[in-house]
Length: 124
Image 1: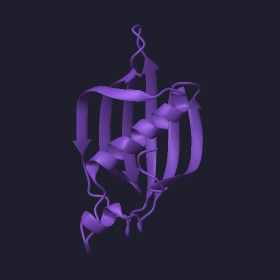
Image 2 (image 1 turned 45 degrees about the vertical axis):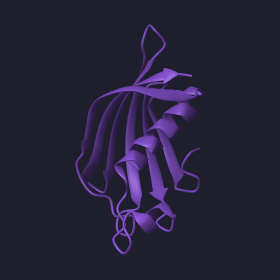
Image 3 (image 1 turned 90 degrees about the horizontal axis):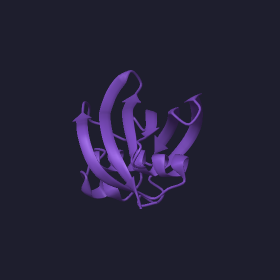
């Protein structure tokens, strides 16, 4: 895991076996990454939001993955880990004929949509 001690999975719900999942996670608001992003006003880096999705998909598929393509990435709201450290990720996974893994993710805090992501990962 690239983001050591950055977040903790609190709950995993399978909506449709091997396809749709919901994860509740808690962000470690004391993680050192927030000392630089930004001092006194911590904001979740977008790349960290994307990495969390990749980490979870790797654990679900039991594969190491390389992001081959992002066709849709929309950061919809700022996540301040001191205020909104509890997130919900809805992840849909589909495997293509060539073995690549297509992922759709939406990440929310409370009722606020923070991230929409569609990505294609290659198994490595």
